Image (cartoon, rainbow, N blue to C red; front, side):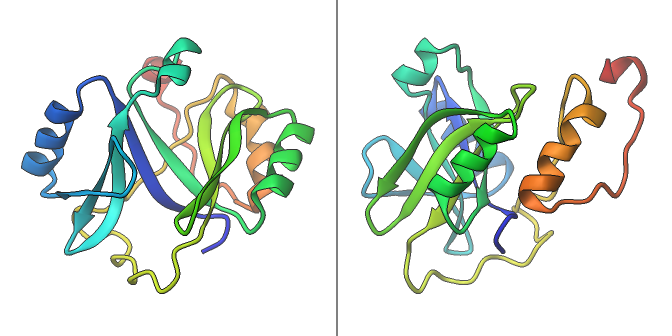
Length: 172
């Protein structure tokens, strides 16, 4: 699972409306966590995503409502250094929520944001099967110049490009 997406957060300006939306549309069940202001969204009793207000410090830096994916890494500080060395940016971290996760908020050289993280939960329940209804089933990179930024992901995460689709005017 290392170097793959394993968790997702949605940051929003209206957590009540967003929670209702995902309950009604996706069927997720909200669960309060030990972290104030953070709601886990679960599928069949297993957490698949989290929901929270856009943090004040992030809003001050221009963050807007968005989904962010977490990529599992073995060593967050070491990956932070590798990201920095490869031209990426570190926005926050490392942050540890004891017994839950260590993470950092980062971006690639063109500014696409994501999180790197090491889960710390012992005996976590098995994840829902990939492509199960209600799980995240697609990851897409929006980039100014994907050909220029893709080597960043290949080098850091060992990913390979399988398909590229010319989106025409919609993608420019």
